[in-house]
Length: 204
Length: 218
Image (cartoon, rainbow over all chains, first blue to last red; front, side, top):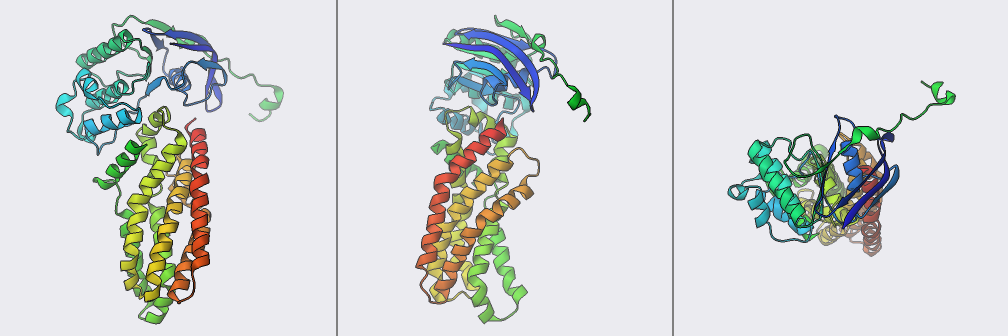
């Protein structure tokens, strides 16, 4: 398995943000995206996950392989932890949620409605969802937001396990997870501001 | 697909899910009409099929803005879009769940509320039949409207304006069928046309809704 991104240009609302991004992600490999706020990490991740179209370039090997996790966890407050997880498992054609519950220490919370979890617990449940998708490539946008140190360790352990099983991970994060990972600083790929010609200037 | 359907049903039935909102609205409209029209039972009998159909349509409209907006707000729609389910299927399943939680209760409540409006006895059967044939189209068209307006803050107004013209054919033929039956006339033709509209909507709208949803998520 290999995810190859070639000469990718991405934009937000039609404005180019990043251009010329290229990397290859192989089985067992993790790639961490770094860059200041607003530098286009989320836009790049959404493009790789197929939620938006690239402005130029290609993403190869991503079809039906990606489990995406963003700032919003997509949890339903009225459903319990187990129901939330079981729903996502069956959407992805899986059935076993026990390993995911164990990996993120959610076993004591299985019958609690997701609406009554703390922010960190919700985040853990959102990350546990990745494990029930059965997909190889995890695309994670700031996965450690609102996690405490112990939960970050649980998450790092889960990622390590995923990589050991031949998976791959692409994530935007600012903290060091203690995982052997390559880093890609997206600020080096900033797209040049669109050049204006005289006709445009007349309207500014 | 089945998991999504049952999840939507479970969410609608639990606290805060909005189940019963449409039904309560329908009840309020039908209970208030006799007060506003006055004690003229002949007039009520005459307008009953139309009022029942209009009430059902507006009740259906009332719950549409939450159809996709909730999943959009909590990020579930993005996650569903990256799942193996096709967007067309997601929209169709959500429309089906909407019909079961909103349309079906309206169909079942209509004959009871028909009594309040002094509906002619010959009209009950066709009224229920026409609502049963017409409300699935209302849910599916509504899902298309919801897909068009997903991501727009307070998109409910825009949704209503977009969806109402598309509801008109269903309302015309549905109310016509119920009216003709109540007057003792043959209602076969409007029922067939109503069924035809619903079938066309069910066949085409999931693809239209899936396409606009794909554009809106990007």
